[in-house]
Length: 160
Picture 1: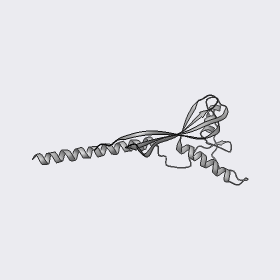
Picture 2 (picture 1 turned 90 degrees about the horizontal axis):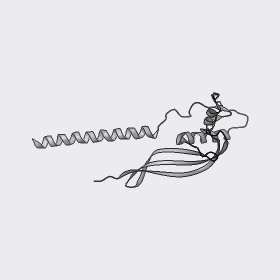
Picture 3 (picture 1 turned 180 degrees about the vertical axis):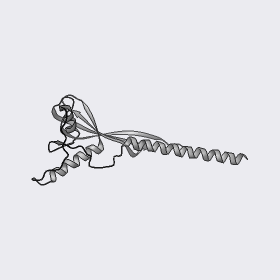
Picture 4 (picture 1 turned 120 degrees about the horizontal axis):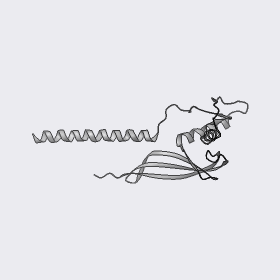
């Protein structure tokens, strides 16, 4: 039996966002592209292995990669802030950046809330596609090892 496994990367343009570029430190529109790498079986996409967002500065052309979880958390956070009542302020742990480049990176990553840098993530467990892929390979190797041991046992029993 032949299994045809592979990987396919799909690109999707998302709406542009106005951000600070950490390279040229200018506030410009950034082109936003979603890259989704999926595991395929017989050319049918099954699961997403790696999903990331790429911001491209329109002025200098520099690209910055952000994980999809961070992108999604930042957009959920901005929606929650927009839905809050006008007089209330959110409680963010404030930490001042060391340089303009650090501040631009924090703004680009969406960690700035009410002028303060937010240091903690909104969720506690963080699953990366690299970690999942590593455990899939370990499980695959364990299955192959068990199959090899069973074949050796079967041949030794049949040979006696």
